[in-house]
Image (cartoon, rainbow, N blue to C red; front, side, top):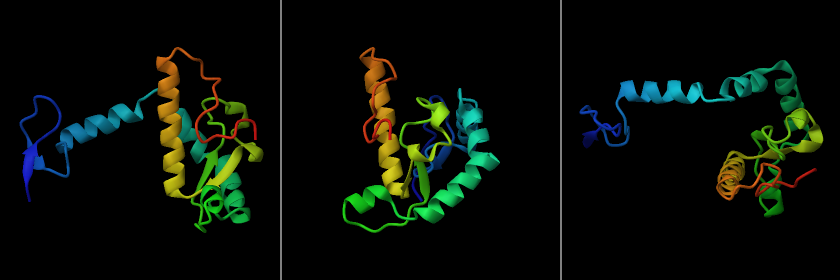
Length: 139
C-alpha cells in the first residue's frame, strides 16, 4: 500500500495515501470540529425526542425523495431536510411545512449549495436573509 507523509504541516508520520492524516491529527481534527460553534446545540436538537419522533412519522408518511420525484426517479428518502435551514429559521425547526424528504445524495447536494451560497453571500457583504440555493423559502 503506497504511503505518504501526514497532510498536517510539519508532521513526519508516514500514513497510507488514502488516510491523509496520522491518527493523532485525525483525533485533533475531530475534536476541533466537535467544538465548532453551534455544533453541540445541533447535536442536542437532532437527538431530541421531539425531532426523532417527528422525523420518524414524517418519513413514514413521505418515504420518497422529493427532488428525485421531480426528476422522474423513485428513491427512498433517508433524510428529513429543513427547507429553510435551522440557522436561518430556528423557529421553524419542528414545523412540518418547512421539511422535505430527501435521499442522501440530494440532501448532500442541497446542503453543499447552502454552504456555498452562504459563503458567497458573506463575501459579498450580504445578510443571511437571502434565499439559499435549493430552498423554496417560506414553504
